[in-house]
Length: 211
Image (cartoon, rainbow, N blue to C red; front, side, top):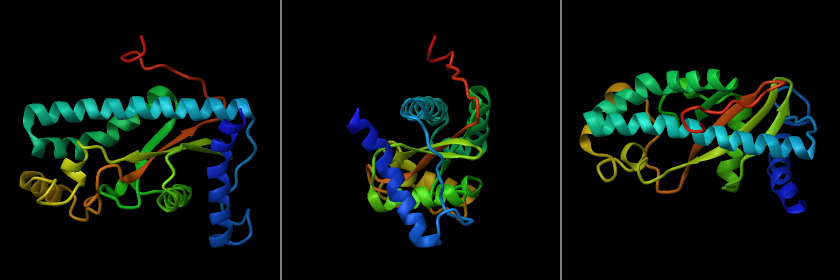
């Protein structure tokens, strides 16, 4: 139990220290603050956030692979451009949460991090931590977990002309003229899943994956 508690609290300590150094006195505008969570609530939100992030990623990946297999890489990039955000919003509504994928190196500017997400992303970039983390805010409990570059991701997020084929590069240039989300290597941290659990959140299973 002590080891689990350390895994939960250590990332929080790191990010609070980083915030105090960069923003001054804790509690000022822009600094991080977490209200206390019980041990049971901490475990619940870590597990629930991890579960939902995996399910949402699986849903996006399923549709992306379908577009890739049936229509090729150009149409797969178009799918991400037109459908990934609406799908995430739809899943968020289904689960009763607010979820997004965000990064310090953006492809879609609509995924830009808010001030808290930016500090969390900086913490992950500095520490290379693989652990999810939670913060309790006035809006509810916020959950974060890193997104890693898998082998399939390199097709769109790897090194141009090495991992990313020409047809994909053409689509990326057309649809994302200010794209920053390239030149990653396998297992790099590309960003985070950010999930807001509102007060009085109640778990809802995905009927397609949890009958």
